[in-house]
Figure 1 (cartoon, rainbow, N blue to C red):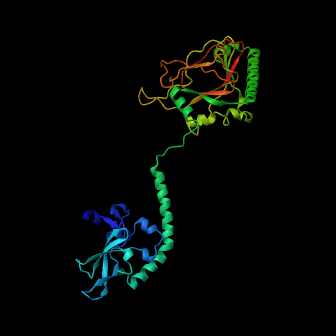
Figure 2 (tube, rainbow, N blue to C red; figure 1 turned 180 degrees about the vertical axis):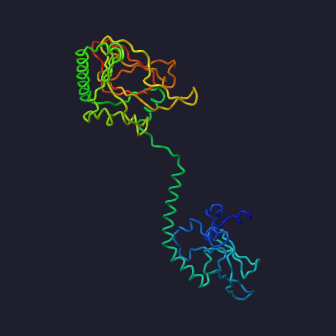
Figure 3 (cartoon, rainbow, N blue to C red; figure 1 turned 90 degrees about the horizontal axis):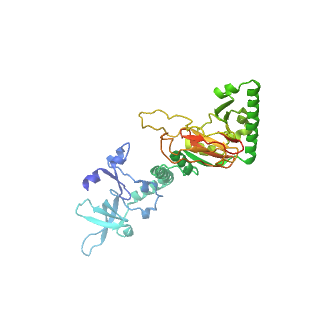
Length: 366
């Protein structure tokens, strides 16, 4: 409508409209009615003069019949309105009721541009060439950025996504990766030698009672037949495959974030004849605003057995979902795994080591 037209800038080339609110900061030239070109026209390569449609306000010469039997003359006219598809209307001699409509195909026969207009448009075309090319590149870049901004900000799917979701949901997940057989053997030797050295010192110094009651920094008795060992040798560069280069670390980082860091490690030894541990979690829930608050996953344990875990040698039993509620009633899971394979669980998940009814010790790195 007319009100819309007053609130819009109209392209002087194609007649396209753009609401004045779209110009920020406001462009005074538009509000003053000066010539404005839309983005498409401003960035389009300059057309040959013969293909340029006259724009509203442009002065032309049109062919007019002067009378019966008389010849025709060229009279002044002003373009009144662009009608699209190369057509336009003109007002002849300033007479509001003398309106004619032409198209590009009529150029040279029924209308033409005055020499002064031709010279001006040629000069503008020369100036506009390089500027239009630069503007076209800039607009294309802007449109590309706008298209990207319009797309949902979704990270590409991670190959760890399914396992991270299982860890979040169940509180534990088998990593599906692990260390090699040679690395398992290397770790097993360190654990065996470390245990022998610690126990030799305990017996030599007659510290068996102290070991059972409170333990030492290097070795603690967690339950009958179960020992928790700290082995500094496993933190040396030779064992980087257990630390920052561990094959399960990409999954840990996918779950916790790229800044996930190792805070503690050791080895649990379970000897033949050991019994079931009490149910427990390795860490408490973080306090929140109310009793129903459950913090997101923020700490995990990684178990790596150094022997094949079977139902006989004391695997670990877990209660899925107990990382949300320690007392949840749910069917337990007792994963059995190959030596060197990793299992990751939320440190709040309820679990217990089962008794070792086999004839061999069971060593497990954590």
